[in-house]
Length: 111
Length: 118
Image (cartoon, rainbow over all chains, first blue to last red; front, side):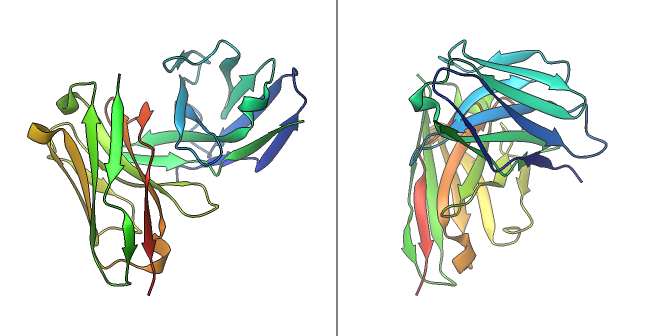
């Protein structure tokens, strides 16, 4: 069954970089995903679409500090030069035949 | 500028009904599939339902199948979610989202809160 796994929490210092992971379920390692950011008390915002080969397309206005990469069944979101406004929940999403699947989300704390 | 604006949320008793709307602007509404996604208080995102560009194909999460109906009115640039037989565990913020074609959601609305309680 198609599923996405994310660590519940992550933390990194202001100005540092952080790499968030989203893992696809067995047998689905070639699936593309999308990353979304949800600031506190706000609706989600699309960050990027990420292919299995690591190529990615970002949403409108997403800073260069946000990038994506892939390795096997893992999909990564790297945020460099962390800023306080990056403190948010980050969700990955994938899809199959009309059905969309979300990971549980990672809460990022900027120290 | 792409905008999605949900409305219709509120407090409803268990077993009751509610219809959510999502007004779309800034893009050709008939060119995109659309979805509803919900988020229970303090929880993650849960996909609810999706509809094709034409409206002929629809999909539902098992948790809402038979109780919720998704539809769209292209003449009004509006997406709907008819919710019947509501239960306490349907309490959530409901978001509408746009996708190129049943894939990633590239724009989201701000959400509307549905509370099911007696």
